[in-house]
Length: 205
Image (tube, rainbow, N blue to C red; front, side, top):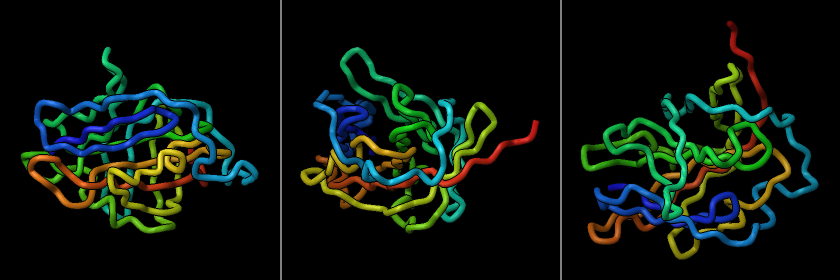
């Protein structure tokens, strides 16, 4: 059951979860910049933005997640790939967008399951407000995010502006499939975790 996403990266993404083992990509459709993302422009960030750096690991203690991160880009058809099906415990980061902790909205995606069994974001929907998401970066800093809310959206009611609109602070979105599964059409919905940067830790040498 492979994730497939139709998206306008950085501005709006509509997730379509499919069970096709042949198509583990995301079709991108560019649209105008969306306004009004997760945080109102007047809201001050809880933590100053960090300088961009590649994420290498994500940890979510409350649901026992610790996973390596791989960069994802667009192919010639404008589609964003998903993490490899043979690595279901890997998380993907859209590397052409903000890095976690950088100004703007960073995107991490992962499979809920595959044909071989459960995957890394199986229990993403049980996260609650206040939970911590930690992202280790290549610059040996750990960006710590606090969850604001967790939502499940059906395909026809996915709020592009809210999920991908411009933000006044560093934010993070975690995404996977959700809802009911249909053998022909895949999952009926998408789970989206909204979080914002609240602190930063430096790792020792």
